[in-house]
Image (cartoon, rainbow, N blue to C red; front, top):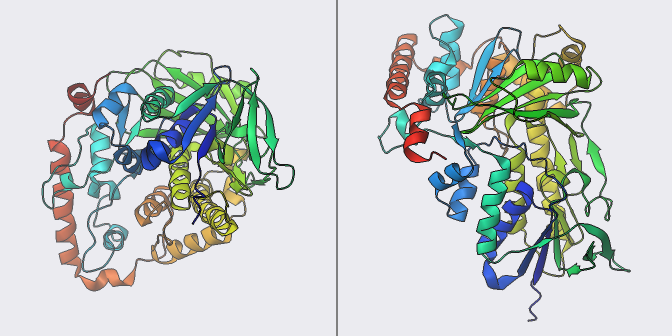
Length: 500
């Protein structure tokens, strides 16, 4: 048998996507499998505002074998227990989307069903009382899970906020130590094979030429290879997710670092707040059809916790994805593959998922079309499922006070999402489809948080008597409250373990 393995890999672009890819490939493939080169230019900036994550990033960190305290310290990060949503369902209303489960399932029946039965009868408090993440976030508490048996303290689920620029530098150091070679320079020409159109090499401004068997496009929105050379095409989702710009600005931080991301609905979109050790990241995601850059500028600066640390900058985008993420010998990862607005902090996950699925479908130099087609199908399905979850936030609202919100409330939505909404509105049931990213707890949190009211509750929740259900939920509530009381303040945990 001939050795037809990939001998050389060129990653075009640095930033979060490029250096995550370089770190993962160097860790999994090792030094001897293939030469890995990353090409980036200091003259080309990165978007660099994807500073909030979801718990799956812990899988990536463990795979790399990095020390978590060192990682948080070096990126001036903080911990995240979920997302607080302000003014989304209606003005003046706030809810929390926590990581981790609510309560515990009982007798094979979802906890959500038991809670709905009591809540609809006025016999239970709001759902946050049964989530260790929600209660800890409310109190500004954080700790990592410990071995405490059935206690909620054993089941704390969390992610991170961090400085995206520092994260890229952290991973660059990791990848270069593992053998990745960084090549500084701006690409001026992409060389393709005359017959099959495969990318053969990229030529740089200084005249150098870098050849590779496999190219990974991490060049950002431009998609230098996947679109510029290979013309993959783009699927536009603006009719579902109309926001097309973000204005971002950091501001001075506060001593009390909240352990969650905040998303506040505004007249033509929403504003993020991401607390780090040294500053707070802020941005207004909006649709330019419904407001002006000047109005967004004024609103953003009027709603900061402290003095702005830079001039706000605008990032333009179109929600959607490449028609094909993998074309010939080029795979697009990160913003080069598409973009869904940062509402549920999925951008870094999509990088992570793209890398993981590339490794599980890793090609040889024959680039079998079957592997490529499967990769494109799986990533497309995953992207559509995330899209539907994001659309839910806009569609399920009572707001009609601005043209933007009136459009979102009345817009047509994908059939799969319409079915999910119909099922919940009938019986309060929600399901995780196959291996989709967001589980039933996430769907339940947003559906209830956005003020959707089911007609009734799941009938199997009557498996336990009303008295028994009340007793068990009270025990869970008490355990959650006591566990949150036990936890240290978020700022104290950072000070004692991972202060920058």
